Amino acid sequence: MAQQFFRPSEVATSSRVPPQAPEAEQSVLGGLLVDTRRWDEVSDLVKSDDFYLRAHKEIFLAVKTLQEGGHPVDVVTASEWLKNKGTLEQSGGLAYLGELANRTPGTTNVTAYARIVRERSVLRALLDAAAAISDKAYQPEGLDTEALIDFAEKAVFSISDSDRRSLAGFQDIQGLLTQAIDRIEDLFQSGAGITGVSTGFKDLDNLTSGLQESDLVVIAGRPSMGKTSLAMNLAENAAVGSKLPVAVFSMEMPGQQLAMRMLSSLGRINAHRVRTGQLHQEDWPRLTSAMGLLDQAPIFVDDSAALTPSELRSRVRRLTREHGKLGLVIVDYLQLMQTGESAENRTVEVSNITRALKIIAKEARVPVAVLSQLNRGLEQRPNKRPIMSDLRESGAIEQDADLILFIYRDEVYNEDSPEKGTAELIVAKQRNGPIGTVRLTFLGEFTRFENYAAPFETPDY
Image (cartoon, rainbow, N blue to C red):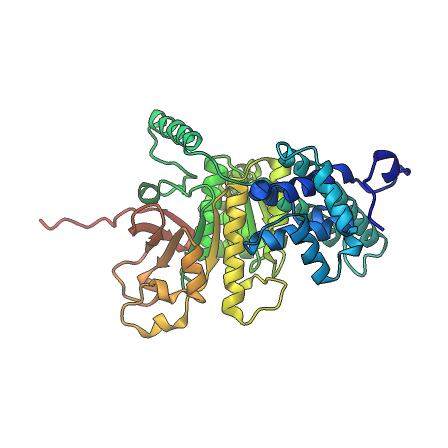
């Protein structure tokens, strides 16, 4: 028997029936069976799973398959496809397809009907997510509250991501040009030359114009070069100097140790004395001063081990909701992250991680600075300055990064180096700017980088 056309009184008699819009579903399908020229608009808005009724899912799938295969779409071809698949009867039969086509309100408003179908689908997904969250709360299966919150956020955010993708599309060039001109005028009026977040290092800012919104920044170096020190100096300069919220994900070092490093750096206090508590009398006023600066700084440290990109993303979103748009995200370090999924090998896994970090940067519109190790191979070369191929699992990192910074300090390899206290920051890649090398002064006892100050040379008289 052919499936009957639904009417409001026949659909929902209970207030607890899941959100649905059978009439809108019918209007979408009928419109497509009559005129598939609206297919591209509709397929951007809805997928087969967005339809509530199983029959409508099958009919939409038939239209999709025929359309994408370059075949004509109408009542006859759709019924034949369903018949061959063995789902014609459960889809209402030929008579129901004909009724859909004959009773459609027309194709003019088919995209509006599609939006209604999508909205009801999102509401059902929210109910499913709420049910899953409720089940987990009743039976946590060993998960602590933090893990439960992460689970809940992922469940809801996955719906948000799906909905955002369905609404994404082209922007006309005229609108983009207006935005670009407005941005250029703002920069011209400011006259600062820094278009992103200031690093606090003059020469680096001159070369990069600051750390740019939505950029993935890779800071790489061999052990003892000062990767974590540089990253924390960037955090200090952004949070203390520019008053921007900074998120630090420290998977290697406990948060307390990072706090000690920042106290040493900002207070210009010997790091060993800070770690051991063997402070000199003159250190206490400096410690108090550093405490005052950091106490007012919007720096947030998460020292959870082996985070996945999904967990990191949830925490960035949560921090953004609580404290507003972030100025900088720091991840220490890349090789300690995991995907939480099986991968062919570690190179593929790192590729997935760097891609996810780039997506986080773009989504949150914040520079994400991730620290990375280098291969041991460079130790065998006479010139130990890093190059792109020295990046561990280099292919994916090199491809996804917008800015790559290598740290090189000659004194690490040459005890008698004339460059003691000097660091080279090699800008090996900059997607939207020049590459080059800047010098910084490295104050090892304070774990601190500063603007380069050339050593004083006694003149020869």
